[in-house]
Image (tube, rainbow, N blue to C red; front, side, top):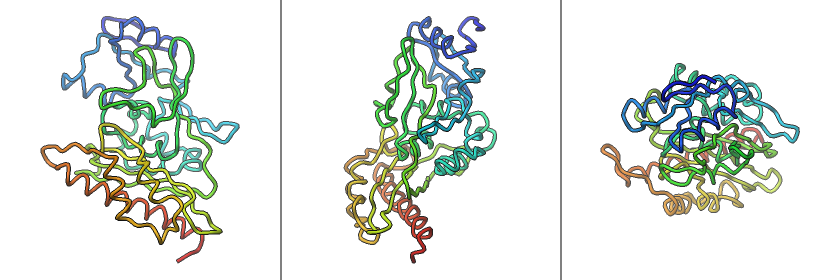
Length: 296
């Protein structure tokens, strides 16, 4: 452990937790620094103690679990996800999302854990992890705990992390048989800009009876935090793909989103865009399924 005024370099998770405890609730974890450094430079954050965990090797690995789940360490970078055969075989949507993140320089620095903990309505990986029904593994002074990612976010500036806890991994459950996925996002530019709205869809089509047996939708940019569009899912699940009423889907979606307007885009525009992007993403996932099954 290396400690100086306002800065600490932790060599283990236990040391990082001790640092958080010693800060009296005013410590901030930093790894790649792509978010925290920006907040500090803009004077939006001024932690009493900055705790660097970038050298904790135990959080940098991707492991296949005996039950078929995939465990991704919090310090795994977006570039690692992009190049990981394990990730591509298990959850190709995470590879697709990583490919679309900013630029190579930031993909090599930014970490999955940092992206998940990003306060507010940004962070593309959260959409895919929500659609994959992922869980967050959290370490504190007493024990390791796990909770669904969709329960992790509380509000725009609040998560379920206590002041002496940190995210150590993301657990992605075994993929469902016949699952198909798609990811789309819209923003001012493809790189070096915040995404306006992002949508990830994972669905399963029953091959014998041709209906959507399951669907999960993760979205970002449409509320104070990343969210799962449960009402929209309900209007799609159980229907044959050709019988989906997209007007009903968009109306259901409008009941569960609250995109904030800004100086460039109004709330109304974002609401319209969210419905359009959701439909396009669902159709892209269904087209992959039809192609695999040899259907027109």
